[in-house]
Image 1 (cartoon, helix red, strand yellow):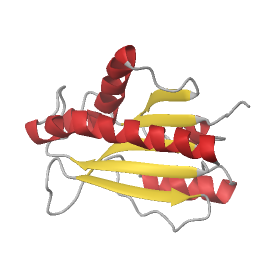
Image 2 (cartoon, one colour):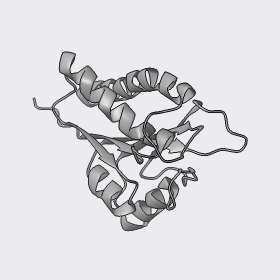
Image 3 (cartoon, one colour):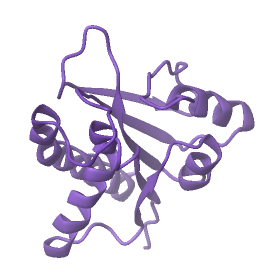
Image 4 (cartoon, one colour):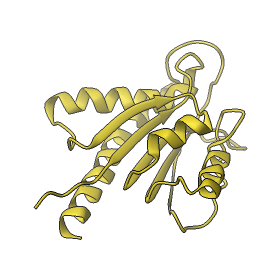
Length: 165
């Protein structure tokens, strides 16, 4: 019996705006970790600048899409990770991205167009610095490895659920 689950892990951001590169840093870490312990063959690791159409293209038709993005909060707690999960029929998203058009808007557009993944998990990491430049702030850099492990656990749960579903 062949089990098919399509999984997309999407790092949203801008690698040249310091902490806004959080999503890209997690994707980079996952790629390096996969060299030693490969991810399921149906898993796609991608980066995106947050364009809603591009996000929908990346997650359309997937059983699981995991999106990692930087977020702004007031007051800010740099390095704090927020996790939001919804399914195609779940509650509306109000995530605040560090981009002009937020991830929440992309989710709502996908909902209206019927292009949401079966399951969507968003990890939003509060940033400290979105100025021009490369490299993450210390509190954000400290959560990249644990966050990569959390994303791998999401992938494992999805694979296991598909095997038993």
